[in-house]
Amino acid sequence: MNSLFCPAALACFLLFCSCADRNPVDHGPSPVGPDSIRLADGTACFLAGMNYPWHYYGHDFGEARWKDSAWTPDGIGTPQASLSVDSQFAFLESKGVRFLRGFLFCDGRASPEFDSSGFVAGFDSFFFADVDSLLRIAGRHSIRFILVLLDYLWLDTACIGDGGVRLGGHPDVVLDSLKRLSFIENALRPLFLRYGASPEIAAWEIMNEPEWAVSELGGATRQGAVSLSRMQRFVRECADLAEELSGQPVTLGCSKSEWLSHWTGAGLDFYQFHSYTEARAAPPFTLKSDLGLDRGVVLGEFPVNNAPVSLDGYLASAWDYGYAGALGWSVNGKDAYSGFTSPGRADEFASWATAHSDALAAP
Image (cartoon, rainbow, N blue to C red; front, side, top):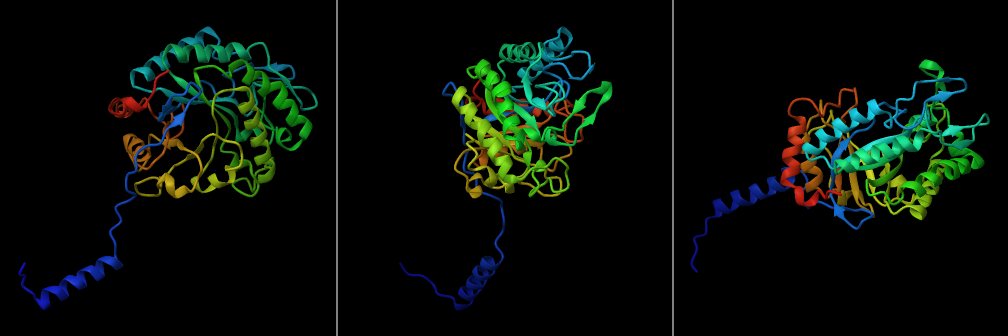
């Protein structure tokens, strides 16, 4: 085939290519498609949902008590709380929410019970009734829970709250081998034995954002912080027991993606990190493959309010960049990032969930 040769045109073309190589246009990560988490029943699904994360922080399960003082029992098993939770779950179900992340022990203000020496003694008479109620209501509305065992405030300096109830102050459960054993045997073992086959539990989470209580990471100035190696051992022992007694996967609520690598040997079935990116432009996180991890990753918290990316934008990014789920913060939180029930947010989720219903498995 004959062609015309123009030296000037060729020179311009080569100059263009040279400039393009030096100044590439960044269009963000290329979509790779979603990953999934395999649940105990064999279902593989994308964990799209919300952080509940509590009805009342710290006393949804058991009676908040210390010495002779106590708050009136108001856990999820009480009639008033059950009606409120049922109404909320009905709303969430109508918006396509199939997965919730909820906190169980929190900072230890209501459960488990401790003896006078700081050893875990078990649960009070309200605890299991409250958990039973939560799971019964969840099952009624086709919702599965990621249940968070501990908040990092569990290790914080002990203080006395309203009504004389003790908050936090339990680093010894991580540091002391005998107290750790009392927690594992008197709290976790009965918990996993009772609910290890519950279809309403999608996964167990050992701790929410433990890095804020790790001295080498985010807890450098926090009293009660423990070393990374001790926290890793604690997480591993809890995860091993969950694997032994329950069929549900186990995870951890890592504070930042850059700290995920600290938990690769902790016996987790999938990883999780939290992203609050008010200072950065979209996309809010990187490709999952660039994290160099050996298991699936879920975006465990992202803001549904005051965020640089819309709610469905976070979901779409997680879906496109190879993650296995995304859970917005939050339904009941009072902070600036929460607000799922505000106008438009829940409908935004509902539209996205409808478009991706095949991957959002219902119980």
